[in-house]
Image 1 (cartoon, rainbow, N blue to C red):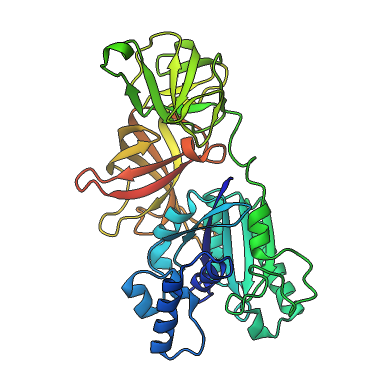
Image 2: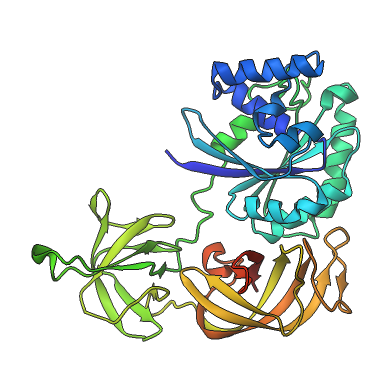
Length: 414
């Protein structure tokens, strides 16, 4: 059974947490004691209905303010698929949290309040999800009950959003009218909107095709750990463990090691459950090779005729996540890319991007918290990179502050 990771995004009070609560509740993915606790809290607050948003807003500050601050992950399954939900915050000051939640998602649900229409927040979230190359976008137009389930209102918002999305790299875009509070078109089709002929939200999530989203063409295997058991019966075992970042690997395949450029063949592919005949993303496996090559953590195994770019200077879009420091030319940082860690120097900041208007401010001298811009980096040792658009694993990296060891930026290689 495959897993769909999806993120929810939207403006404040558009009903993201309520929608997830409704999905969990209607697909019978919550326990009775959880439901009792939510009903009790709803009564204490004086609300006439069970506030399902309380199922996901776990932090006390979130419950007190009625907003989502951190990324909350929830898990549920139907007979068709398993789901991992990242409930990401809507506020502009939590852009970094949204970037974190959406970076691994297969699909993003952008919620729009039917009364308010497409807001600045909606545009920002649509832009960020396309920047992070989330392959599938669903625009859920929520609170249809408050506009009397009017088809005209749904069509107006759809038209406005489609116009904005034409400026973005949105590959797969769907629109679904819903009411998360009442459950219209969330798990089952709504009788209140007979004019809508499409699937319910859960049906769409169960059937959206994600197998072809991963890069199955370019073989990329960043080495994470070298396995050399010291027991006598295994003394000649030498395996290279890691997670497949792209392509399909099979025993007998010709492979090349970077940075040495030496070639060999795969002898076998081992997993926790025993040997396998093929490995593909995102499987974690151990490769054994026919020849002894000096391979260590941070190296890359690929195909001889299909190699990543070997680069010590890269151009990237960076989302800055530090509230104290700023990103400016001459800043020194640690860069972590796949399994390789090196030191990086910011050579140049080309422009800061206004996420709301898509305007490029070329006079900007630094990036502050939650700002995104295009930068050039020089790195102390070569990285084996692909464009982020081609492979999110070998095209993405994080920047780390050398003094505090905290993550201060996330980057996408251009």
